[in-house]
Length: 381
Image (cartoon, rainbow, N blue to C red; front, side, top):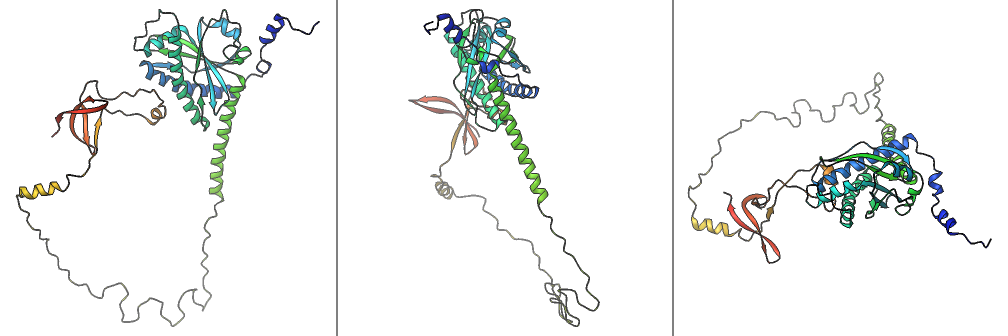
């Protein structure tokens, strides 16, 4: 033996599954329930973001948490498919992988480009991967925002990376993420996009990432319980105001603070004197109707012009309003760069011109060199 490894031995070592993943114990029922709840809230928020991108109703079912290996995925999922890796850069340490069917990616891409979702005959290419990466960036960005509120800490992700994978040819997941070479957590959803898509998607977690999410949720819940308990303890520990005892005076002794026998009480009126603050006799009050000066009916034009000149230099805020809409607080918190907000104005409809918030005119948008402008078309009386 020369101490050198053969190529077969090197390949076997490189393809060896990660012992830390294979040897890990499955999640407990409590951990599975927590992960399912996190996935349910995160993907629900992501579905709302996807709706704004494709302008189609998006429904995602309740997640089902299980355990799987690469062989399980290859045996049960359609091929080829798209693996999208999302890495966490702030708040959590780890990554997860979303698995979509190639048909679903084509439909989403066509809808994002303004189509009707039926242009799916083309081969899956870079355009589709770029589009689905952008969609996932916004979807998982909004999901990270929801996760931040659940864990009470900042969560951020790296830009998603998409790869087309033919499960019949690829025997391991090392090219996508190392945890796919062993056993991992599989979260299955049913996704519907209008009447165009009705399929299943998967979200794959390493055990370490799933346990970190569960640990963060547990710590956050414990902190909230301690804060509530501390608040109750402070209320219970607050001393009640002691009652002031009123001891009856001994026979023949005056009450504490009371007058001695034969002395008048302080502030009490002496015989023949009025009590302080009370009038001795009620005086008659003279009530007459108010007299107002009659204003002149006409105002001199010269005087009116002079008065208006006094405020000619007062600046007023002129606002051009394209339209309005109403959003819930949850929807506003889900805003991310690229979110589209639909207004109540129809394209081409005259815009509103307001002065200090008062509706005064209608107009149309024009371009003056490199700036926007408004041409007044109607004055509102």
